[in-house]
Length: 474
Image (cartoon, rainbow, N blue to C red; front, top):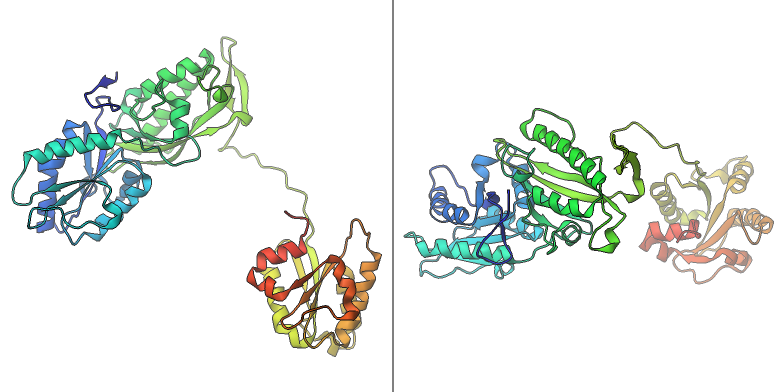
């Protein structure tokens, strides 16, 4: 379907009725709120949408039982949203949906009833800069229809790229038929997508997929475009199946867009694969929305040959395959021995617990939780724990090292002496508990790998302990 120029600047008209989602207070079926919402829809919104080639969709008749999912998708993807707010006090559900739509940066027009004096009611601060049309309550004002039409067109002119670091676009399918490229239209796009796939004016929004293909064809090798077009035809058939619930086949592209004559040099000799991130269709299947990421698959694209011997690229990513990577070489956890005196047990146990919880596969902490000094074979168990350790934390309390910790320190010092100075296999750090300003004289050997304060560790257990136990990590 060819693009037809319209009177207002920078806005394409395709002949397709683009989706306009309506936010409105509903109320009970026979309530005054529902009656007024229906009047506004009939008297203002419907004629304005018809004049601007939009298809108005309300959540109540169109979205079916999956109403929450449908509303969220429509707010995220609809090319236009009109919010009828009613009057002050504002309906909370309407305000939530307006806030959601504002976060998408997509076009939004507000309607509200005038107050008793015929003036605009006080608006919340965050809505004061938006486009607003106020409506009289007692009568229908034809001039307000024209004003709404002009506001819709003004909002359309505003350049609102999707805020996304990668090329991404929203596509609306107005009819049940998705196979024809004439029935799909780009309703929003990121700056990257507009530059990558837009026409001569770098505009992707407003193009039908047929027009999009016309642009892509000029920038791709003939064999590549032929393969891409054929693959996209199958993708649209799969989308049709999902839309009508006649097939569960995942709509997945295999052939990327590979450019060799792109007007922006950095895109030449690179490949981009369309990936559907989000899609939705209402229960009546009258429309379908999808959010598409154009993933750079240059590094995973490979050459293939068609029946005429012409080369093209395909994406070697196999998301549906059963291939698995070989396991990585396992790494042994660092065994950390915690040396302390009994009065400081509760504080040291906090570090012990943090090591177990924060580094479950990287660290095996060991501390005497059984009062081994009270049993006859304590030297054997403690000696083995120290000998097996890759790292020791020596906690220095206000009472100084007792007999037991002094005995442990002798073994720790012996292990430090055995170390290779350039590549030490065993490390030891002194941890000064609260109230301790310096190392005891008999423990000065612990300076070699650094002294830390417990007050610093408790501020951020994870980062502090990682720097202590894994000092080579950046």
